Each structure stands twice: as C-alpha cells, then as structure tokens.
Length: 414
Image (spheres, rainbow, N blue to C red):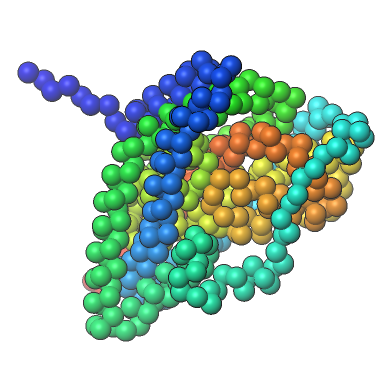
C-alpha cells in the first residue's frame, strides 16, 4: 500500500496565509478579537525568530569566515558581495523613480488644511560618520543585547579572522563555534516548523484590522510600488539567477517560496534569515558562503526598501504639489542607496530612512504621515524583495567561488 505523500512546508505556509486572509475577512467587524487573541500567537512566533537572529548572525558569519580558511578569501568574498548589493540597490531606486514618474499624474495634491493637520515625529537621521563609527562596537555584548546587527557582524568577522590568524590553537575555538552553529541551526528548524501557524495568525490580524480600507485612496501608490517590486524581482533577480548563478529562475523562486512567504507575513528580513539560509543551502549555495553573505545582506541589502523610498518620496512630494528636479531625483538615488546600508532588517525600519531621503530633497518629513497607515502593505512586499536579493547574491557568489576553486585545482594538476 502506497504511503500518502505529505504536504511540504511551503504548501502548509501558503495554506496558512490563505486561511489567515479568509479568517481575517470574517473578523472585519470585530478586529479587537484578532488583536487580543490571535495576533499574540503570531507575535510569539516572531519573538522566537528574533531571539535566533543574533546567535545565527554571530555564529554563521564567524563559522563562514573560518570555513573560507583564508583571510584573503574573506576579503575577496566580502568585496564581491558588497558590490553586488550596492549595484542592485541603485538599480532598484532607478526602477522606482521611473515607475512613479510614469504614474505621478494620478497622485492628488492634498488641500493645505489636510497637510497642516499631519503630524509625524521622525527620528533624527544619523550623519554618515556617526553611522561608520557606530559599526565598530565599544562593547562586546551591548550590540548583541540591542540586536544592533552591523556591530554584531563586525564582531563575528573579527572572531572568525582571529581564529584563522591563531592557526592551530585557534582551531579549538573554531570547532566550538562550528558546534554552536550546528546547535543553533537545529533550534532554527524546530521553530521553522511553526511557520504556518505564525503566518496564519499574523495574516488574520492584518486583514481583520485593516480590511479593504487599508488600500483606500492610496491604492495607486501601493500598486506602483508593487509593480516596481515585481519588475525588480523578475528582471534583475531573474537575469541574475539565470546568467550569474546559472540556475533556472523558476526553480529558484519555487525553492525560495518558504522564505518569501515568511518575509511577506513577518515583514522582517532578520526574522526570515534562518529560513533563507536553509532554502539557499538546499538550492546548492555553499554553506560557508550563505552563512557569510545572507546575514550581511539582511543588514545592508535593502532593494525593496530602496524602491519604496523612491516611490514614497515622489508621492509625498506630489501631495505637497512639489515637482522634483533631476538633481533631486539623483539625490534620491544616492541617499536611498546609502540609507539602505543602515536600514535594520526589522519591521518598519524603512520609515526612518524615508525621513532621511525626504530631508535630502527638501520635502516636509511630516508627509510620512500620509502613508504611515498603509506602511504595513509596503513593508510586506519590500521585505520579500530584500530577502530574495540576498538569496540571489548567495547563489552567484557560490558559483564564482566554485569556478575559482575548479580553476585552481586544474592549475595545480598541470
């Protein structure tokens, strides 16, 4: 007798998302119930993911650096990764600007009375030098307690580099780090099995609380942002995966589906990191590369956030009846690209960086209040795009390193 085929995790996650939408629609008239009783279960799931983020980043990057076995190789992989991320982010901003300028005629200029009533208190954007200084921690444990990922990445890189530099003595610490990483990955798999439940609870609350009205008059700008997300994921990532990573794009998207759905519902690239690592390794990414590239990407690669910032900046400017110049458009490209480096991989962090972009082009920061109510919808798409970009990079860099190793092996045999 044939054994019944069990549904895969991606299938269960998708079922959880659809069920969440349907149940959310049933509670449109009573969203307080979902907020009080269903959303907390989703919050527990997110908390479990977040509690893993620091140890995953710390041990995965340190183990990745040690696995590379050569400090020169660490530098080589790091530079390639950074260049890839910055190029795709700059392209993302340009795509966002082109699309929003095509559709901006449909954006209404709001009456002065409505604008004067808007209030949004933005956090002060840090200066470039303060961001650079902040990357290097003055305390070993503080960045980990605060989940400040850039300093944690620096700590992990130095830890791995120190193990390599110490040679045979450092190998003992290297083995300990490798063992700790294995333990963390096992814990991660336990939590990932809860993803369908977490997705169901989160989606139920989002739909019940916001309902159809969440789109409202902002339907056009949300649509423009999602067109930008789709163009970027299909064209930029599709071509990257096909020609740079040497993989069929359909195979890539199918295998990455669990991580993409998780990102869409949790709106946190950091929380999706463990699942993203698992998906990339199954697709053939070198474990030491994915352990290094993906945590780095969850912190500095924010293509979806970049598109959102470009679309939102032009939309808010139109609401204030401001026509942006070419110089201001170029400033958006520069600021959004650089700002993406400092955007934390947590839900809603893009709003802080949007304040920086608006300030750079002279648009009132208070305008953020216009779209603050629907930021969740933007966030779902941009987070999904962000983690997809991280995965495409991991596969590309893995292929480069495999080709490099093959050439070195062939040369050694001659």
